[in-house]
Length: 333
Image: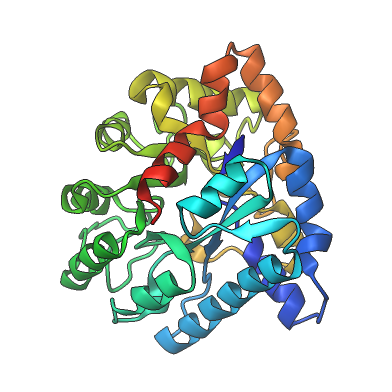
């Protein structure tokens, strides 16, 4: 079963619903591609890409949450929202494709950690405190002077652990990363989408020390499939598998999965412009894609590349989804 821990498809679905008045854009633009790629469970983050005032960020986030629920409601025969273990079990039986709502960056919460309770009730089951930038809760990967968690951030982490959120450390600054792991105790932690700094040196990628810490906490790394972190000078399937190989060597096979972060279709759908703190290297277009891996429909190409590198049977199943499924089974209510 293939689990993708990160695809920002809600941005496009919300845009087509609100701005273009399309009927069921998820079915038109995403469901066929997810099926073609063999995706069984797709994590769908709420991401607000503009430095809006808290009220504006919250409105935008709620728009994406509404788009998520519209996708589930309008395609009830084909998909279901994964809120708990029973939903996950249905996905594992192959009854329907699972969609799991997450929150990428806590900017929509403004200065109010308690708003995390609202997103929990909306069905979000995974949360990250930061995107690349600094916010009231923590510092992200683009901050040279990483201050880690703020007092509000510590409150938010404690509340999220109490609610049962899976804590996502993607985009966190290095100090934020360490402090989050120290504070979460036995709570579930993942990095939904990132790669290995030893393979390609980029601020969004994790050092070997960070990879080991994540594994020691029982976490899973979603190997990111975007040139920004794979290697924008050689964005090939072989380079993706280089990251997989290194993560497996450092963390163990049971701590590595997939977190695509495909952007090509999103960018072309509504002419998204990357913000200054996106960490895109000079000359790399926002709609760039790894060769033969532009979207979920191309997952079979990645599977073939993994098989060529020697992954098969249990090892392949673990990478494609088994490891994230294990975390979800333990963490979901």
